[in-house]
Amino acid sequence: MSSRIIGRIAVAAVALALSSGMAMADKVTIAIGGASCLCYLPTMLAQQLGEFKKAGVDVDVVQFKGGSESLQAVMGGSADVASGYFDHCVNLAAKGQHLQSFVVYDRFPGFALVVSPKHTSEIKSIKDLANKKVGVSAPGSSTDFFLKYTLSKNGVDANSVGVIGVGLGATAIAAMEQGQIDAAIMLDPAVTVLQGKFKDIKILSDTRSQKDTVAVFGGEYPGGALYARADWIKAHEKDVQGMTNAIMATLKWIHTHSAEEITEKMPPEFTKDKALYIAALKNTMSMYSETGLMDPKGAQAVLAVFSQSNPAIAKAHIELSKTYTNAFVEKAPK
Image 1 (cartoon, one colour):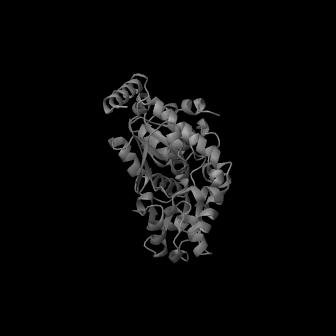
Image 2 (tube, one colour; image 1 turned 180 degrees about the vertical axis):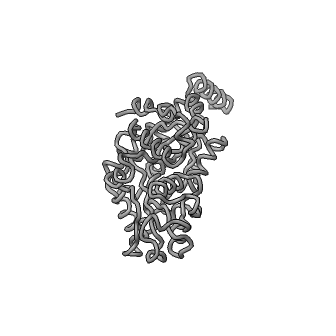
Image 3 (cartoon, helix red, strand yellow; image 1 turned 120 degrees about the vertical axis):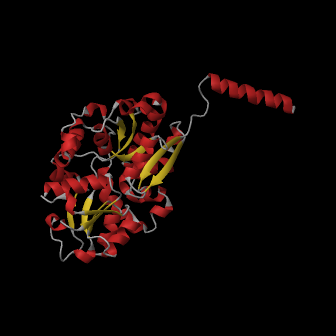
């Protein structure tokens, strides 16, 4: 076959693809803060399993230090979607910014307020954190929100506490071990790593299980989700449906495989100590949603928490129903 004929066939194929809507979709950038954290595992695992590609979405995952930086990337337009905590959607709604979550993958947040091993003798309770330095993933992130809520709930002036950004993984562990901070809001696998090294580690507040979450918040409290600007979602419904389908397929995969099998699929830089990673994952498995749906009561719990610690949010008259949608999850293959 001559090169001229081959060329004509190639041009015709491209034209056919364009006319039938089968051309390659634009790349979708997902921003994620602290990708090694188990709270974000469903997004990273979806990428590792090839679920985004199977769902017809060309995804590029970009890693940031914390959730606030992922949020800034979405609001600034350098990322399309954030894999982060739903509470950002509520917080921004109070400021007139319209973000929506479209698939929830964490049933509860998984935060733990941990005391540095070098400061266990002087910090016995949350009240002892006044005038101390406490680490969060990044200022303005969900870990920061949780810290302020916890301090407020226990009668501690949040302004008296020095908030230090330490990330979520190795940097947070190092800051705790070296005593650079007095305590930190941490997530697994970092919490389990510290517990493995320091048997007398002190945890002042924990939301890594349903029981603990209910004790802290009075009910379930949604954590990780995929969210984006509401106008972007409306303009990219096909991509949003594809990402939702990918996360739903991944959640099903998680709940039908062992912690060991999941660990083998994760990036090797996340699982250098496989035994500890597996132990942390076993502690975390119940966190992952089986439905992908936002429970309206959970969204209301997020608003109640923010309203308690931030008077501006209490006065904002937020329409919660606009901060999330279950429409894409309901259309996902069962």
